[in-house]
Length: 145
Image (cartoon, rainbow, N blue to C red; front, side, top):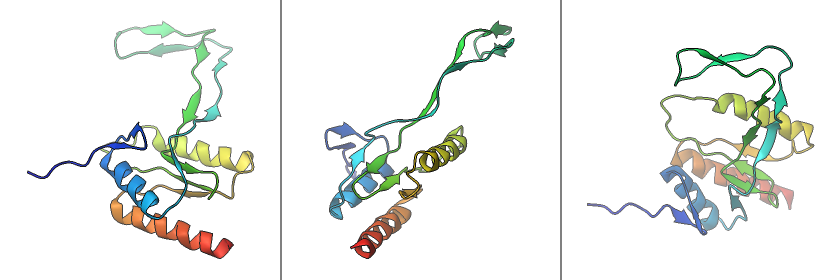
């Protein structure tokens, strides 16, 4: 039986095989980056001023959330390089998308509004796409020299 690759890299436990693959390819290309180094605040917490009732999975009735804080929304990308100005979010196979597409759009807006629209952003879904991402980054860095 083939041994599974360790999910630990750089003192951090990566969450998927695609993250491990991307980490190894970035290291192999000698690109400077960090794994999940920071979170970006996309929507700060706030209080809805009107009446606000919401249902929950655990209860049949609705709960009164009036006057309570609505949680903030943050986004933590997988790989970030401020030196080379790239951000990579690996997204392998997912049965459902959940909130990622909305969170990603808010992140794109955040990058523009904070003057970081010059970063290269990537969302590869498989190892072939990761290879392409690394090649694009290397090509762009060569052009910049």
